[in-house]
Image (cartoon, rainbow, N blue to C red; front, top):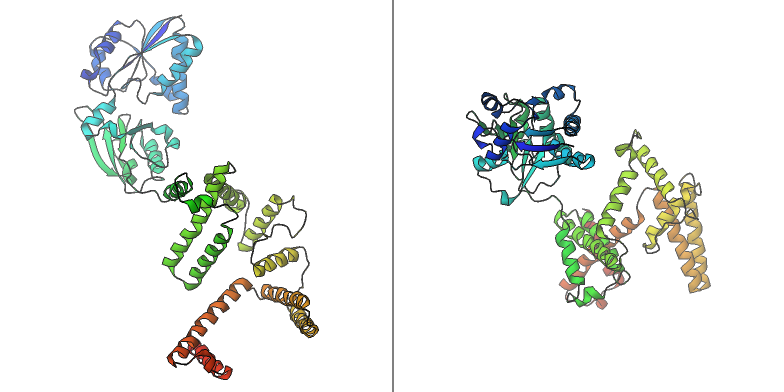
Length: 483
């Protein structure tokens, strides 16, 4: 069984080959180069060193991954009967895929592998661009750009930008993360007398005239704030709930603050109604706090985490939009709704009743609307609006009868029937009864404030006004707001 010794040819200048590597080159009985396309090769030949190149493998390979695998397996096969030296551009341990594969294959085959340290183009790049690697650096082969992190916290060096096709692929991959005009450093023949290091906008990468096997790139870190980061809010809630935090926050449970969630939701609705963007932003933040707070309490018991909440919502959106994220077609909004309802029905198929799934804590008007909507989906509904008007008159008459009887419980029951039927009417009119009543409440508040101000201006007490006088003030307020 033979062995493999891997050496590096340095970044380009013959003088940057280490003394140890040069001695191995001169003394090798079986010497193999991954490629002759390296600036030091001519000088090595001039010094009488002969070798075998793997350049012929490039022509038959369909991809670089296949190429590197073929080279590595051939070397291991040869090493079964000979001691060989394998030379690669730069350093064996920097962006050299064949060496990565050799480390795996040699272990599997029992071949001894020695890797000599060498100088890579990265050291030259640090010097030329004035970069301190202590600040962090990501080095990646152009063929591996599909593994490019979305959030790039460090500078990025891209090697093996062999030709315009790879340059175009590299550009498109980077443009998914960076702006089209983001400045990058184009590097050609680094460390050689005719090297070229120039700054170009990203979109011009594949338009460079000198792209070849000596081309690489440096992409400086994108110093931008993430578009979305819930960490500060999550950390604050964690601190508030931790030992030594806020006693009130620590004492809360899902049940104790459930009404807060309802209140915050209605405050969001009010901000929307007022068309106040700044207030809406504030109220959405308060509502988000409720979500984070409940998620934190659940995480403390091991039930679920905030990330699971986000993941579940994301997966559900993808699952219920196959016409966007799958191969289902939806010609219009109506078809999209039908697809959504069909998928939702499949997800909830274990429910016993058609009416299951309406939360008990909903406001009564909203609950009535949802119950009627569910019943209507199975055909339990009028086909037109006229019978609804008749039903309202019927329920009002029954309420009058109950009032005549004087039974509070019966009156309450019949009043509920009236309200339930009015909600049904709202469905046929395509009006949200909850929002309609909320708007009426606000309208009442505004008009009452006008009446209230008139009472104060008069320096009289409320009791000094007759109902007719107050009604006149009300009509004046109504007329003023309608004008």
